[in-house]
Length: 427
Ligand code: SF4
Image (cartoon, rainbow, N blue to C red; front, side, top):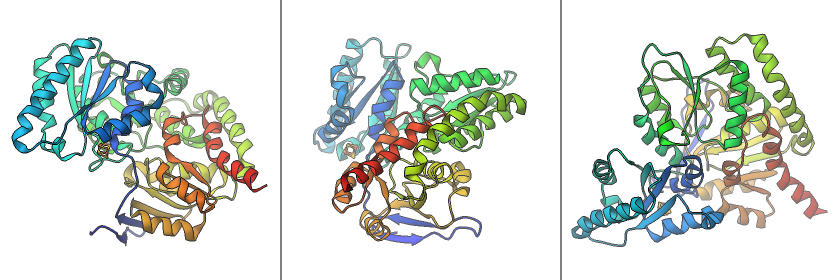
């Protein structure tokens, strides 16, 4: 399909139709994931092999990190012709040597590819293999791409976790069933889920990514896993190829999503239903009460999601089923029907689904629809605000703790705040 073209996908009769667009898109590249991944993986370092643009993106996105000794950096590859590529490899080796000598605590080094043509010419997979051999036993050197040509925003995390899956030790066939939670979560949320799984009697439970390389959990046919994030298509495939089974559930947003997610684990571990209800009820009730406080402002309001983080479908489901909002259009960079099947089933049939982006066409639809709230990237928010449309930055939804019962009220508040602000400005 040529750029700028849109087609209405021919989905099977029972599936909602999807408007597919392949035009200009306004989304961060996969390098952005480094901002939250480096906080999670405490002995990892992310070395972006890129240009000054990549360095600027990381610096501005990371903001406050300049005060700490950061665990990411950019090796800037300046313009070179093909004859200069051998020097590039030497230069990369030199930078890695220097970095690992200065930072002996690093246990995993990710070489992260980007999109300048010089980097594309450089075979980072081979470089990682070569350097991994050199530092064997002390540092694992892996690579993935965060390039804006190959990845959008949250796909950087998917690529990073996919690179980690082959590093996970194999679980023996006779080992007890273990639960793996897949997707980076803020520590506070991880601890809350750990406590709930403990109370339910589900275990052992591990998280991917692990905080340290040495804590990477085992995986095998006795592993069942729950996705904490909807954007982990490649990681899901990699885990399934290692024999792990995915538990199908709503994503843990809001009281209902979190209950469904926990229930999938409880059923897989044969937990008694009465016990499940007893353990889950207090958190679920707290979540419902917190959500109810925001319902008045959000109920009946129309919302559009522009494609950004792939969180759009589960969030639209949460806003519709628990807050009574009406999703007008839900756009997502990629639509994985398998991972999102249950989410899709709970969206109203009138909601327009779109996959990919042709930004001008999409903005035309927003102007026609005039939703009460548009969730979009930073670059589109100001122009839409100038046209009198209220917006919410999609990036905030990725950087804020929004999973689980205890965060359900805050999640609803993230959508209520711009509408409150709009009402105050109008007065
Ligand atoms: Fe820009 Fe590509 Fe670097 Fe991302 S990877 S900052 S899109 S040059």
